[in-house]
Length: 325
Image (cartoon, rainbow, N blue to C red; front, side, top):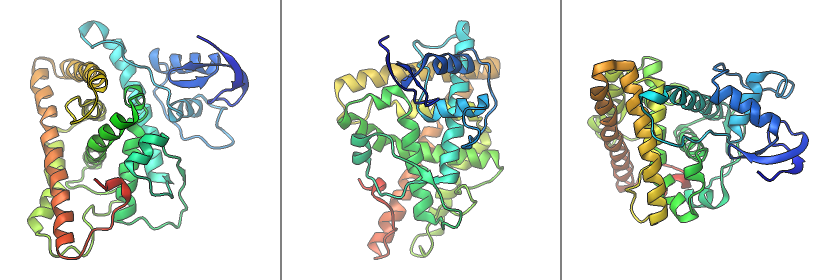
């Protein structure tokens, strides 16, 4: 590992820096992250403040994950490496904490397209003003952009060629956002999709859209997720399987091979989790979880039909460039 003296991305001290877990960092921060995640020494979370950023271990770990540190699974999972699965789940849990914090407290005040993000890398988030009004347009944008930012945390997505990265992000971000919304509904014991503040995902003034279509958007996915009582760990792994889809049209052979390898790894992780938590009914649980992909597709299609119906009635839904296809 080649190291050069410059500022560590994590502790911001002038150190000898190497690329550790995908981030330019010093050896001390590398070892801290390894102990916290790979050795499973830390499972608690904290949102850092300026005064506390490097003073407590929880805030330091948050910064490691926020900057993109990730321990890449090197092989498929089986009954003999459950400790590695536990480490992966801990890593994904901390990544979700960062994602939720960005969704609920931060914002992006530009209007990037997926192609622009594919070229320029992860978007820059800023603190959201407390008096900022969050309507359907803004919440939809933030759910989508945080899903994209989350996907770009994974090296096998971030390291794709620009054209491949654009296609994969375009294919998966809506599904990732919907799946996260469904988990929030299950956690909060809600029976329909909503944004983090509890507001409706259906745009206002859409009288031309049938009540049946609106109902399908609100409850199709959430109803099945509630029926299964999907857990956060299952959601994290299902998300990685979805974003690692090698069957996306027009991607390069190299991208297809990388995605196929990673999808096999995360699929084996989900299967191993199902077996560990459900015993003999593990394979059945695994199939039930994968069936949620059809609910995701149906819900996305319903959103698309809603937008088309509104546009045909000269009442287009106001959405940002992220949703342009």
